[in-house]
Length: 458
Image (cartoon, rainbow, N blue to C red):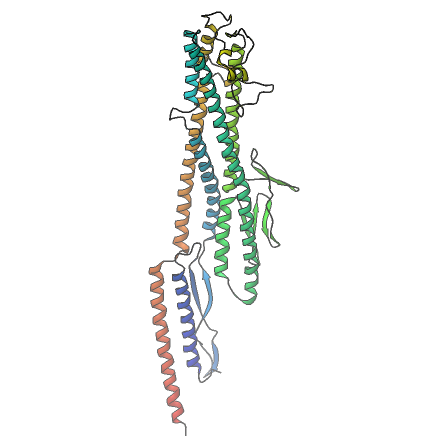
């Protein structure tokens, strides 16, 4: 049987419902600039009617209540964003790394290895024309020292960049552990909320934002659980589950792009971690090419120079330092005898004054194609290396720009669905305000009617 004060109850319920709706609208407006925030909406519902007896059993509505406060999310767009963030993290990280390599190997200023090669062969050509000139022999010594120094310097610069990228691998693993710990903590908070009938919209937003950041670091897959928590894996490696966060393995192999622990190996296919590992592997490839260049110069120049006799009457001297096995670019330098005295340089096989045949042969090495360099000349091989670095950097930059555009497009779609529109919120605020005023007016009418009824009593 309805209470005599049912009208007052209905009006007061409406006042409370519209007040909460205004609170939700204010919450949306205040978080319009909060990263990862999802617009929330108030779902109204009729309160279960009560029954009373007239000529028959009748139902009488009891007003309005709030069924839920829901956040607006599109699961499909969220999944697309996770995948796109992984691709973006990989491409931009690789692009940044290769830009640094391109700067280190920049040969357009006339001060790089290419120019040093030209000076080296030009010096031998000059010695061939004037084998008795001590100053020309010093020029060969200086040109050889300059070339060796440029090769060593380029290799050391690449080693420095490689070390920085390797350190970045460790730093990225630390970031992953921090984010997975955050997500696990949010899982626990979210898991406990529904017990008390609460829908933790703001906690869900924080968790989604953390997952989005994590997807930029490594490729992940997420699985929603019935208790509200989320499980996160990376290619069969569990990072977060109901038990909490799992530390990511710290043993990595950049050559294969894998992490490993006692339980197995795991491919890293996306995110910043994959980009850093690929950058390390790419730089190692460039260093191998510099090693091949240095060892080829050692072999070709030394094999000719050692057959000559220098003005000191000595033969069998290498021009560049050498060892078995060869050590590559890391210590590429002149042979100690050549470095100590330019007179140790041979210009001819006989050692006779005016014999410049050996120097002429070495100057012609500039145009000689070598099987060890893939049928290229020394200069052509180095030019190809510089061009490859430029192509790799340009390609990674293009890929990064494309992925940036993809992420921006998806983010725009997410904002369209989940973002806060101040115009819409102001319209909602006005609507709820008017509804509140109307409910207040109804309450006033019921209050007046009740007062009149009480005054009629004797």
